[in-house]
Image (cartoon, rainbow, N blue to C red):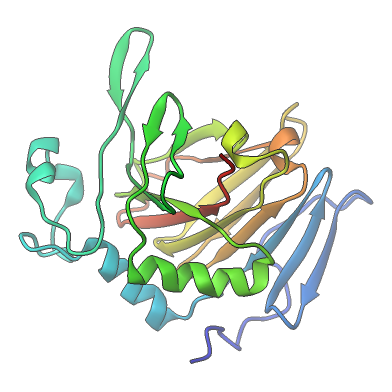
Length: 248
């Protein structure tokens, strides 16, 4: 099956600064753009996974034995109700963090999968890996064909709608190694993924669409931050999978 949408034009759908520190080149073989930025590199393939695979991925993430996943307003489901839902393929959780002495639920659901003993800690939350399932392994295998790395774990974020978000941060935890390669794939609603220099002097807004793949590499996590801001007009779910190589 051809994973790629051959109608994709060889023009980037977002702007990057037009200075000598940046360059954009179409990679015909990989059906995506190699984008050089100061202290890092991006690979962006707008339609890496075709619509059939992307649609099936959303279904795979939400299939359960109690709720009609297409009709359920997940925003209105309480944590108590959510804990009783038996998802067929995924083990979702709703973590909380401590902030200024208060316990605050994260504005998204998460799930962590990976090889045995590949735990991951961020924002004071330690996640132990669920065993790989068939759907995640398929996605991982397809990405590894072009990423030149074998990933051993993945963090899945489920943004229920445009009110779910993630603040500015870098993937610079010690478990990820010095210069980690992070492969991010998006299914569902289009959301703006924004990267900015640590000194806030420049930023780039990258639309992650249904089936888009973005790979971050080089020294990027030391010199750049990224975020997914709220978007009030977005009413449907978005799933983001970030594949990583945990070193411990």
